[in-house]
Length: 310
Image (cartoon, rainbow, N blue to C red):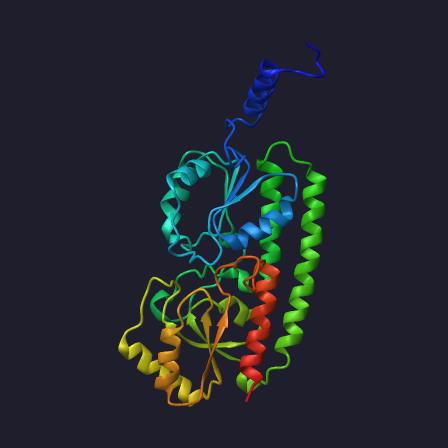
């Protein structure tokens, strides 16, 4: 039998060697332990841009899921605990998988809680007042800091990568973030000062408001988490504030039902639009926000249209 032709024994030996090399056996998905595991799909998209072809990136949160409540399977939990690097948002965002993150960190998995590294602000009102706000990604300038931190951790914690390639990927993505920041600034400059007011489904746009000089008037769910719920008096109070301020639009998360936002618009007793934003999750490829950059561009356009319309 020639080496060129091989045979069943040779093929079996070759497959066994490959399985040993990837440390995982030959799984149907082709993915084994190691690599980079990311909790949210927003950070997953950004991490993939930085890692490029240098490392496998597993993203736990599915498109359209709620980062506060999504959960993972036992198999996914095992993958988390075998990662070379665990990238998570932190500051209490991933409530449904926090115990999995804590278990991995306790087991010695290198991790990066990104939101803790970007000079977080605190909620100023509602049930989360005084707590650190985890929704930093609504400010692309803070996402620049996130990219820098993720890059350093990939370089230091993930074996077998080409550092130069990772740093080049990061530099290219930082340039795209600068372009995004400029585009958002130019778009928001079209909104008159007396209309730069945001009412949202829950408190998620504090960083954007700080960066681009908006006032957050209130939220339908007066909390930093979607797991909270408003009382009748909460809705009445906010409706009165919206009516008095003459807010032309209320913004609801595209991934969440907008029933409460519509109820608020009705109670306000004025003609208030309810517009959709992609606030906490990316979508599938055809959903309008398949990447972080696309999400932020779509949100900018929606906010500008909602606040400059009749």
